[in-house]
Image 1 (cartoon, rainbow, N blue to C red):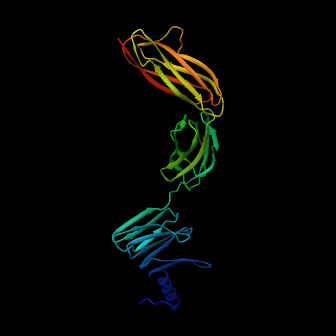
Image 2 (cartoon, rainbow, N blue to C red):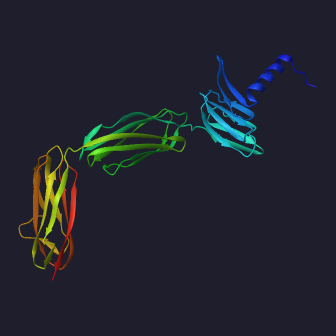
Image 3 (cartoon, rainbow, N blue to C red):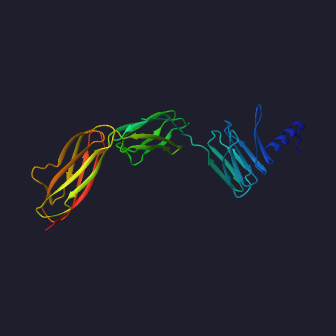
Length: 322
């Protein structure tokens, strides 16, 4: 027969009250930190070494994980009473068992990312290239493996550099830099997202909005093929009107016409027309004379380029009869 001293017996009874019945408590030196009533018998309780987590196994067939402040972080329903729980010394893993089954749940991953610096202009002009840079640090306890940093942009923001950046290993406590060259194509407010992933780290996202103003924006406000139907040997015209709807001068504007076999430029015409500068809210008219050489349906495309504005394209067609 085992004899138990009265003092030890009292301590055992106290812990039975604290940890076994329907309620468990976490204690700090100053007193009770918080109380949780699980509405069912609690068979096992475990506390992480740093005090960040409290796990409890209950007769309601569930295992619970609470944070330092008592907030429920995670729960799992088993097929029977959860009779034992344990937390690893590093705080990464929660183990629990019921019947003949043992489970291990990863609470947090050993690598962890933090964005130290993030630089992007608050606003840019349409047609301008801008730079987005970020400094990222692995603040976790282990090296990050197979790291991918991805950028996601709307169609109005084009990307001239590689979208996904990859790193085999990012050592713990190491910082690394990423950057992308972007171009704003149209005025408006847009969201850009960066996503950071690794095999052994929780994903991290950063979202930022950027405003694009109409610095220089060229629009084709009129386009025509005249006439749209001609005979072999006839000449016809391609005409368009271009407007600078932006707030700045469009510099060194040129237009290019692309013709398929069966059509050719009339005598004296050139493929490229040099328009020059176009003031804000001003317009320019451009035309070509084209000769039909062979019957058929032919597409005709024009392209407008500028030193400081996005390219503009327009297409039409002409029908040539014998």
